[in-house]
Length: 219
Ligand code: ADP
Ligand code: ZN
Image (cartoon, rainbow, N blue to C red; front, side, top):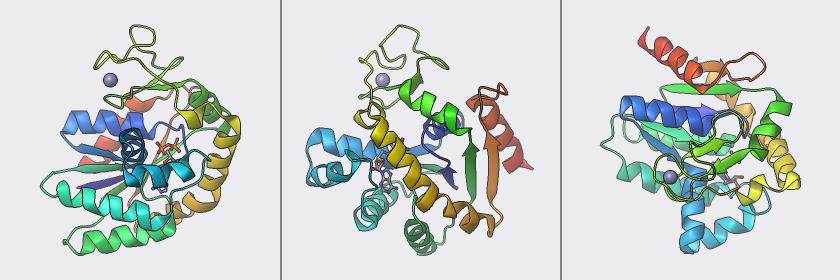
């Protein structure tokens, strides 16, 4: 089963994907995490990707698609994969369909997370990530049990570079609106989109969104 997480930055894609994969034994594949891993290891891919990521731009499609393609090959025996942060452009979505079709597979579900814009910005500023196991925390919504320390692995939590820079945040949200939002239409035409609202204002959080999604796909 292939599931795609859609939604702007800071809507909780990583959190939702994390809960669902843990609960169902699925694999969470985050392109942002893959890039950051390559950057910290100083690989050729990382050096190239960092040129774009540090500015808040998207990494070019060819680089991103070939990285995902390789990873999907490695994960071919998994029963479920949640793509978190991919596809983000129409070109990536079309190429993903081709890659999957080549293996007799398809995208089964798309979870579209919706959150008011002001809450999103607040969440990115309060986001802390574990550089080791990639877990995500939010100082206000789901803080780590011990301040500054990852619940899962005990590593020291960090702020992502692109989250600490308000210009980069603004740019990423603008790119989402122009490049990624059209994907909602693309997948709506296939009838596979499930919208889940996550908002502090209405007290609806990631766990509820996950429960609702699971109900949908079991129907
Ligand atoms: P966010 O959703 O907060 O932007 P991610 O961790 O998903 O964070 O991604 C971090 C950065 O990695 C993005 O700003 C972008 O530069 C790059 N990136 C991640 N996924 C993709 C993708 N599918 N296509 C192009 N660039 C990507
Ligand atoms: Zn950790």
